[in-house]
Image (tube, rainbow, N blue to C red; front, side, top):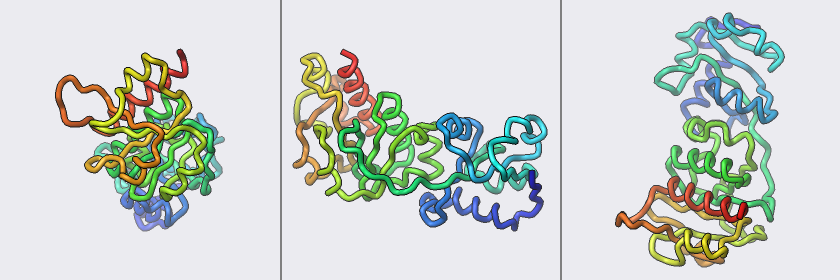
Length: 258
């Protein structure tokens, strides 16, 4: 255990940059993972931290729980930890993790493709739904929010650590997929519930979720094996992209179980 008492400590400066810059992890090659829930989710998936950072209170209440997690455990006063945190109520502990190396696409893996989805909350929520419904590969095309930013991590609630994530990918990479490409539309194609009832919905597929305002690009629409829409009897123009993703991914999971 190493105590830190100065806000000018080099490690704290690096973590502050990670917590404040959504794409800072790309520059540093490290990720800041804050909070007991996310840290335990990482450990449960076999992810080992490079460094553990916590307040004195957390260290004193449960030191044995963290002694074997990492060789470098840093303890600091609550006010210094608050200066690191991106949360209104600082979580009092966090991990510094190594960035995953660049990953190759698994051609036959059920996949979610994010086409310029820009809101961090939406991206994290989609990753959480993807993990829950068995879609373990996510391809984030260029223009999509940074997958490992603190806000996306928090919204994902630990889903990141059990998934195969590829980001800043060009549209051309979709040609590597050997499963049907399904795109969502507010007005084109059959309804997803009808496809499920008729057993025409492929269980292994790649769902494309598009930009919050513009939807899926025309270029990707042209590549799609099928365009699908969601019934909205209430009459709204469209659904939030994270809500639409949850509905479509659940339908595919149901098709796989039927």
